[in-house]
Image (cartoon, rainbow, N blue to C red):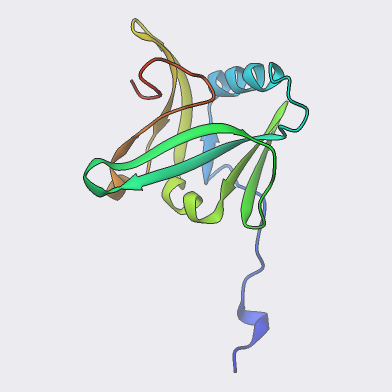
Length: 132
């Protein structure tokens, strides 16, 4: 029989070692979140999709609900939700906002190396997506 005392408690909060959001990205996310006119939107969701030949794709969107296995990062002006499975692919990621001659976008740096892939952001709507 398994001893319940040996099962670690589920921690809902995301630590700064798991996901780092740079000051530039925080400012941009706060501005975007502040422009949302839908009162039901409560956070920004970071997600991971894909697999296969192209590797994983990392992105962000707005969300209206925290799911039972979401982990939460509380920032000044907005919250970030990440489901526990996606967080396994994101540990150590740095999310930055950069301006380039081709446009400004969110970039996911240091994503889980074995998965490959690129970052995209449906929240900012940047042409070519994040990392472009």
